[in-house]
Length: 102
Image 1 (tube, helix red, strand yellow):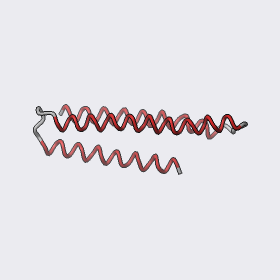
Image 2: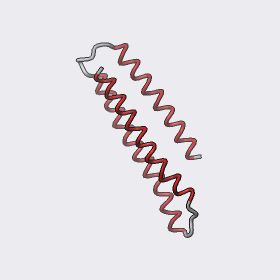
Image 3: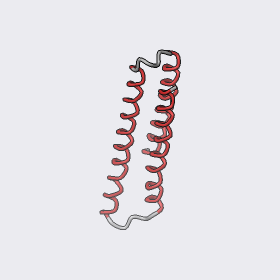
Image 4: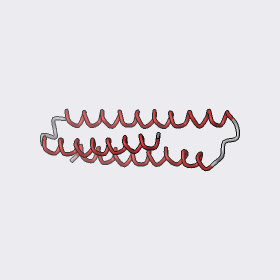
């Protein structure tokens, strides 16, 4: 159960991170740009959000691998099930972010 709790908390944090990264982007789209400097700042923000997202995702995947290697949880079926759920969620968030980029 410990691995499941870690993954669930990770998913919750990712949802909060995703919501935080979407909010500034929505605010920028409602404010008209008046100069080239503001468009330069707007282009830096999405890349910063992507960098933050990727770093968080890397950390979550490391936690997942550590959970697989832990000797105290010998139930391989539970590990595989949790991993599949996490990977399904990961693919879903990647697809959503790719749609946002386009």
